[in-house]
Image (tube, rainbow, N blue to C red; front, top):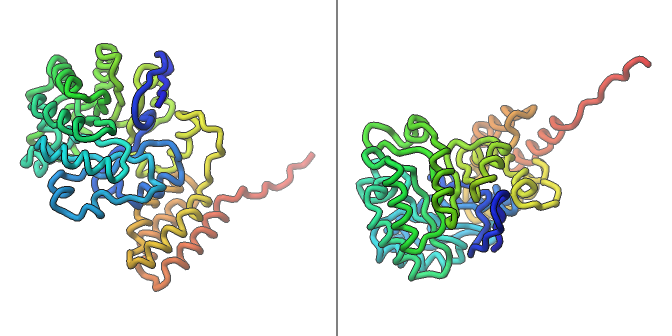
Length: 347
């Protein structure tokens, strides 16, 4: 696929466009969120929550590898470090229809560290390279890596370049770089998203030093204009919490990043398009809040936003007919968003 960088020649790369990616987020980017997000943006590359190799190999593959075709383009993120297991999962990912398989080298939680998963692997570039090589040999879809700019004790720029160099030689051409180090002792995962300072300049330097690689910026991105400015040099951006808490941000993505002239869907149209999906989920025995918990931010900063959140997060649990409440809420929000008639001004 041709991917255009505003200040560089067009580069031909296999797989999906990564100009705008929605980050993998545990407990958030499940299949219901992804279906909802796809109703707003047709082109953004979506990622699954991180799934461990053990869960894929020994668990319910329908659960961990299943998705709705409407979610495409969709990438699978894996957590693991055993090359044979990573290879087996990469092959399964390709068979399941994912367009990319991504290795997590950025999660700082104690639980994953104890299993040699996530950011702790930045101290072991040879092991990451071995895993990437095994994955690359096992499948024909792109193998990518999401990582930090370092971890405590391994946070020099030379060490970062050595990491990228070894992993690239193993077959990885795309690096999604969270522009913070991870501090693996003493900080929680949440604190690791806020306390270490963002260093976007390091990511831009990586692109200058590795111009042939695809470098995607991640970490703290909330403003679309700022994202476009970064993309004068970089190949793409990955957005996490802003895309979740303010999902209508995605309505601008197709026009800004993919030159798609189709009109953006309005919020009420998104709710209407989501309704059949909700009905199907309810018919299959699911709970409505499995889906509606992901849409609470749809009207962020607009009249009625608090009412919308309260109805779906509280009132929904108190009604015997949640679908009727959903329908009433759609009508209510449509009314709240209608322009108010202005009184005539004297001539």
